[in-house]
Length: 356
Ligand SMILES: NC(=O)c1ccc[n+]([C@@H]2O[C@H](COP(=O)([O-])OP(=O)(O)OC[C@H]3O[C@@H](n4cnc5c(N)ncnc54)[C@H](OP(=O)(O)O)[C@@H]3O)[C@@H](O)[C@H]2O)c1
Image 1 (cartoon, helix red, strand yellow):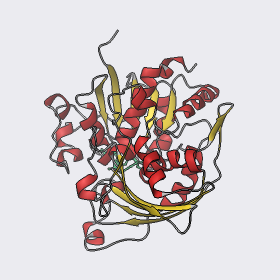
Image 2 (cartoon, protein in one colour):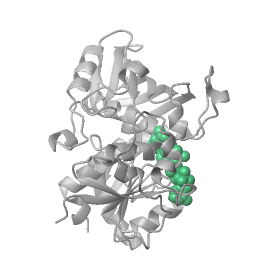
Image 3 (cartoon, rainbow, N blue to C red):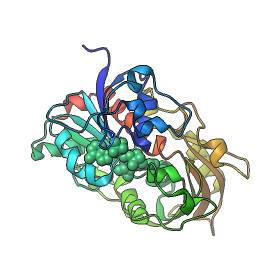
Image 4 (cartoon, rainbow, N blue to C red):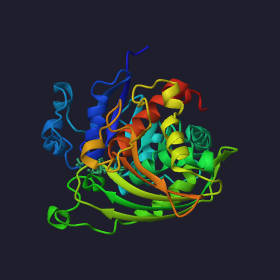
């Protein structure tokens, strides 16, 4: 048996790709075999766009010296591929990889397909069985997706509250970091000293994805939940970390104290399995009146960037509603980290090999 599983990263030179490289560079189970891009193909990874690292992290020499390849599912071969491609490229390329290999994606292209899981490992691991339906596509491999970066932070907090208090309605105003738009993303002259109250398709995604994520799996299909979600999405001039101001209405009575306890005690399958990228606490609850804050809290927890930080838990309008604020790192928990955790779960549970 190989010491580590070999992985390829489709979109390795982008904003999310940079996080994959950082998180996989010293991973105990996985080893990077391919860094794949488009415009930067043929360059050494250190010379590609990702070489302009927006963080101070520099990858180890063996990765910096790798040559970025163009996508070619017929020629490349690895134990699995991660995809952080833009939507159009993902639509074209992901099925070509899933035909042969386990493929774990952050892109939105296939999130809503009935046979494609939309996974947050702590929240809905049971959706993995959907990949069994993908046999009908004639694939030897399979495709999973992770939700939009805003939906992930939100749903990590909604799930435990929904189980305990049964959520009927969610109203959420988001303050989303610039890195959510990729690299180079929003022009600096558009976002500095500014807030943009529009992110294309984002509000619709948060609504529909929440209902798939919190749905029930019946006969290898998801029966969608029935929760009203009104999202109001804003781009703000922070670099990383999406903040969300949430209001929920519940069927059962809810108090801030009970909600805080439920959130604080929440753990999922990744914690039970002690997966390498699983944070000890998926949700960190802060008591101070002015936390979470983007700069102070986006790397909180045992695996920096993987915990969702919640604060300002307070009464809503009545005994059946609640307000709180959450902060979630969009390229880590909201993309690369969530998807690496998904792959670890598949590997540990044997789903990668037993799905047939
Ligand atoms: N940013 C976030 O917070 C976030 C969170 C969740 C999900 N996502 C999703 O993750 C995906 C990537 O987002 P991002 O922010 O990392 O975007 P990005 O910075 O624009 O990066 C895109 C990457 O895809 C590569 N690429 C583009 N077309 C390609 C093709 N035809 N073949 C091979 N590689 C190709 C680019 O390579 P070259 O530079 O070499 O052309 C680059 O490495 C998107 O689908 C996005 O919606 C992003």
